[in-house]
Amino acid sequence: MRKNILITGGAGFIGSHVVRHFVKKYPEYFIINLDKLTYAGNLENLKDIENHENYSFVKGDICDSRLLEEIFTIKKIDGIIHLAAESHVDRSILNPMEFVETNVKGTVTLLNTFKQFCDIKNAIFYHVSTDEVYGELDNFGKFSETTPYSPNSPYSASKAASDHFVRAYHSTYGLNIKISNCSNNYGPFHFPEKLIPLMINNILNKKELPVYGKGENIRDWLFVKDHAVAIDIVFHKGKNGETYNIGGNNEWKNIELVKLLCKLMDEKLGNEPESSLKLIKYVKDRAGHDFRYAIDSSKIMNELGWQPSVTFEQGLAQTIDWYLTNKDWLQHVTSGDYKNYYSRMYEK
Ligand code: NAD
Ligand code: DAU
Image 1 (cartoon, rainbow, N blue to C red):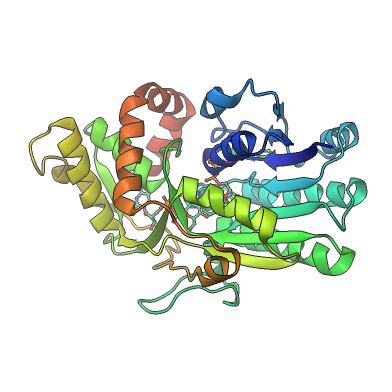
Image 2 (cartoon, rainbow, N blue to C red):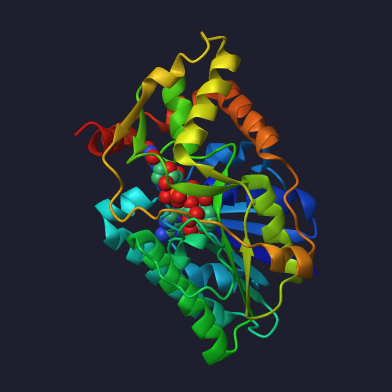
């Protein structure tokens, strides 16, 4: 019999890549995508697979226990890949409670429904999480699966809480769970509130490029399609109750990355060399800004055989090309509410 897999948050950035990957690779699965379609969710991200016969979309909130009960009683759910979340650190500083609602309450509501309706020994509850739960690093070392949790932003605190609930439901009720903690993703469909697509969009529109603080903070970047493959591998081969760290082994100082984007975009757009560099503007630092993230991915590499497939050079080139050929998408997602958010964040 065909297995039913529920993916939450499948209309968002990473979720849409995960949905596409599973729908195309596993015709033996029926994929249900449950997404509230917040500002970050967009069905345009799934246009190419929306009519696939092994796919269906449900608009709804993971905090809505009645809706969840309906979904779980209509279909026997064999696995959940849980990505739905409020995901942007700056928004969590503006409004922490939304993050508690979706990331904590929503995850617990999903766990309760899963516990009540699923075959908990066999069905899988997979929580997709972040490396930000570990806090920040100085110039040395990397996060491993045993690094103590030390979240610094309301976003990372809410993701840490949800990780803890998922693990607690494993210990207390015997749920079959998996968790992965990944570094910064980039790629097509990335919402332009995040560093890379925000800079691409601003370079295109010749707008200032706001770099927080001195631009010296460091992030480890992973191409989103490599994350989707890692999620597939953890879902199928990861051990019950275990956590896997996923990273790109690709650390960049923000300012160096922004300069690289200026150079690549100037070349693509036929601009005068170095013209976009003039748009860089150092702005007030993010409150509680974590200095550095770096991931030790040796567990998933050695035990499950995953590794990134594209270099940063290849991934960035694909990403920039995607944004240049999908200007309508950018136009669409930056109209309306985005304008209010942008002026609140950057034009005070
Ligand atoms: P995103 O903000 O692009 O997408 C989130 C999706 O969740 C959207 O489609 C939104 O509509 C949906 N959603 C939000 N609240 C919901 C609710 N209450 N009920 C149902 N759906 C809801 O996020 P993303 O960057 O794709 O991240 C996806 C997941 O991966 C998140 O859990 C995030 O914490 C995690 N993660 C992200 C990164 C990254 O670099 N973006 C890295 C590691 C982990
Ligand atoms: O590490 C994984 C996390 O990566 C995910 O869990 C989050 O969902 C995802 O949003 C991302 O968090 P970051 O805060 O690291 O990503 P962001 O793109 O917001 O910022 C990356 C770096 O760039 C960070 O040091 C802040 C800086 N920055 C960001 C923006 C939006 C700027 O300097 N200027 C900006 O305008």
